[in-house]
Picture 1 (cartoon, helix red, strand yellow):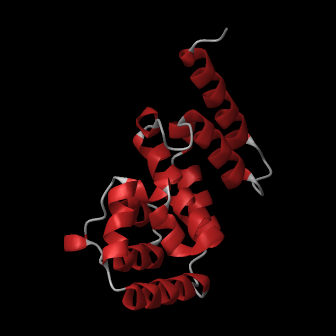
Picture 2 (cartoon, rainbow, N blue to C red):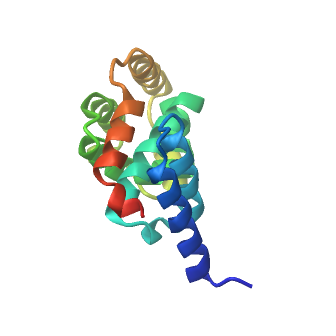
Length: 166
């Protein structure tokens, strides 16, 4: 039976192979899948180095908001990292996307999103639903209309930091 170190080494090897590809068309999503395995979809996020963590947080946010909107993001475990994700998006040069998330984070007490999922959901429930719903709809719309090429920014980030994934 392989050890944890063996599994992590294998995942690092797979990530290295993905980074080394000539065809970069699926690089971001393939690398994201490997990083998700490495950190068990965020449960072991501390297993990631700083560069991998930024990449993971940004990709998770984008996928969750595309899949169910910002309200869904906050309701799921991915929202545990909402505060840190703003900084990660800025690190990846996704400034407009970071502003959208930051405005959503502003709904929470003192603009700080609780890292505990249940506490976060309870805080959202305590707010005026019409105001929260209106803002979430607005932020979802702004995200859909966003002219920021998040795929290209992600690819650029990976290629600039490829040694951190290997």
